[in-house]
Image 1 (cartoon, rainbow, N blue to C red):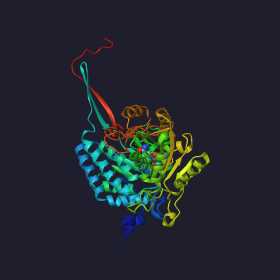
Image 2: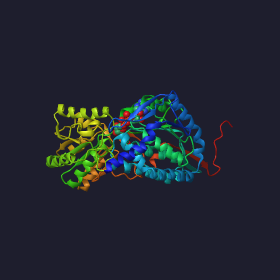
Image 3: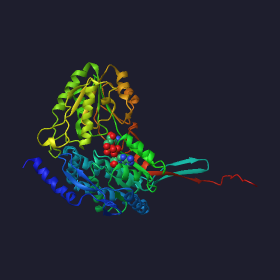
Image 4: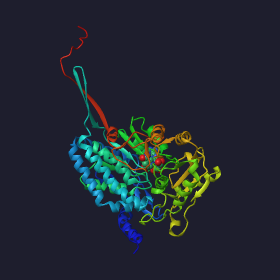
Length: 507
Ligand code: NAD
């Protein structure tokens, strides 16, 4: 049996329970159908075959889940940081034990390649370990002295929180948002994306099997406009951690206004990779290719704009085009596959519409640009890795987030033009700079409008560093202690250190 055939057989065994029982909500420690019995179908982008019938939660389910999270909050918040640390490590251990199941289910649900999803499952465990280790110190604060006074700050968990996640790498992203909330002492209602709901169900089960008390983590499946909306409007939910599109972020802000929700947004990007002629061009080409074509280009931090110094533009883009053509496209469970199917036919249509836009706007399609229609792949949402050249920054292909394996290359004359082009978008999530001139690197990164910048590197995450975007790419930061700032309230207590004179009012 080939590796692929063996993997497909294993995936079938992992998916059998979803075929049979569907995906239920999970509220107060119980697996439950939606209150009004509604469901929706989840299909695999690999072959459009149904994967599961999923509970379609609405406002009534969110209300139940929010009440469960509220009821569980006092005991969870009062638990010692050490006890929470031990529990979160047990969840990480359980994720590692079930990493293959998580990765296989995720591949079939999202179309992402096993090559990346097996790492993403383990990164999920790392997220739990990272925040587990910080749980004991999460409440610590500072002392601030004044005459006759010592101030002590302390942090307390904000309360039950709502977590809303997208479909692209749902398992990893859910752990990234939920682990710090739990470590901080918050209880959670999670609303995963309707297009890839399977791994969120595994995650809540794993957490409770590892000993998480009932009601601390609740899961409500459903659509953004009803379950998602109700979560953002619920008065018992004190904050919303959201990962998704920028325009959904605006909607959530409006929806949360009446209940004064605290919001944390990780949104879209149109991230530049800027390549100067003095860079290590071989490494720069590999990194540019990796950052746009890995994870099907369905990645917020993807380097979707390639800005290249004029003198090397033609040779460099020819190298990138050549590398793009050689990228293996295939079934996500094939260990060799880099590019799998896009999440859904609607998304595939959107991505391909940019190929038409590129043609209309006068750009050149230097690689790819078509749906894959051959053999079994013709049944899924496969799109070739695509490179546009001869583009201008005012074209839609240079301004809008395509969220697929599509790269737009634009030449620049000098540093000033490179910076102007890099900053001339509404987004500001990441930037990737390639140069061997250290003074320029300092100057350029100082002026580049992005929340995260890598110099002479692809995106390599270090969890203590801040993660987040500026402009339309987000509000707030995750990672390190920044996550706790969001999930906790800071209190100040002032202690008098002497008997200072108190003004007597009225005699
Ligand atoms: P989306 O905004 O369409 O959906 C994300 C989630 O929001 C889903 O669970 C959806 O059901 C929910 N939702 C939709 N409308 C809602 C509403 N009115 N109220 C409450 N919830 C609502 O995003 P998507 O298409 O699932 O994901 C792709 C987007 O996510 C891209 O823009 C990508 O850049 C972004 N993303 C950002 C990061 C980051 O860290 N910055 C990471 C991954 C993905």
